[in-house]
Structure formats: C-alpha cells, structure tokens
Image (cartoon, rainbow, N blue to C red; front, side, top):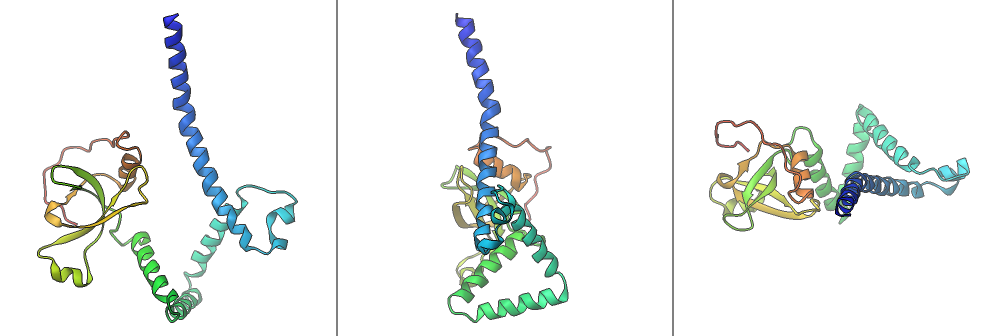
Length: 214
C-alpha cells in the first residue's frame, strides 16, 4: 500500500510539473491576445472582423495590431514618413501637459528600445538593501541634471526589480565602485528574478577579475 501511495504521489507530481507550466503559458498568451484584441474596439462597428466574418475569431486583433505596428515602422523609414513624424511631435510638444508627458515617455522609450543604448543591457550585482546583502540590478544610465552637482566621484543609475513581478522596483544611484557587472544576459537575470531564485542561470567560465566598465 505504501508503494502504491508513493507511486501515485510521483505520478501526480509529474503531471503537475508538465501541466502547470503549460497552463500558465497558455493563460499568459490568452491574456496578451485578449488585451491586443481590445484594440478592435477602436474600429467603427461596421469594420470590426466579427461583423464582417459573422463570428468572433480570437487573436485577429493581435494580428492586426502587430501588422499596424509593422506598417508604421515601414512608413516612417522614408523621408515623407519621418517628416510627418517630426511635424506631429512638434505639434504635440506645444500642447500644455500633453507635450511634456509625450516628450518624457518618448525619451524613455527611445532609451530602452534603441539598439545603440546601454539601458537594461547590462546585468549588475549591488549591495542592497543593506551592506552584506546583494541583489540583481540593471544599468539604466548615469545620473544627470542637478544631481551630479551633489555627488562626488562616479555613480551609476540602476533599476532594482522586485520579485516575482519585475515590472515594479526601485531606482537607485550607486557608486560605480560598488557595482559588479555580471556575465549574465538580461533574459537570464529576469528568469532568475521571476522564479524567486529557483531557476538559477548557468555559471559562466572563470575569467580574470577586471574592473567593470559601465
């Protein structure tokens, strides 16, 4: 009887290990697709796919959204598209409240999505929240504005994500001497954070200790 209970427990846990990741993945995909499908509400009712097809087709909003983003990217690559974008951005900047907000959001998105920037492309190890305790952080840049007038030495701006939700976190300004650059990709670091340390990244080959260049 004990062997049967042990076997049943093993089979049950094996089934969970197979089905739980699959269920969570499908749930996340459904959440993303459902969110993108909400963009169809921006279309006139007569143009909506369910009205034209006669039935609701999940995912068509996601396909149309991705296609629209691709078309905008293609269009803005030529001279006319770039001119229109500059005109539109200039118009928005002259609108109170909207202008400063748009400029701030665009600056952040350009920094994060630009292939030339270093923001969120380097994984760091810092002492936080107190000396002797360490956490993973991501390099976002260097301090700017009046902040640099109150700092002595070189500092780095970092983002410390929370677990298991890395979209929230803390912005810190730390001395560069206290920052350790890790031989770890951002994707691997995010998996480590989301899993609360369970899914540890593989250790890289040993290399000589050198001073990190941020």
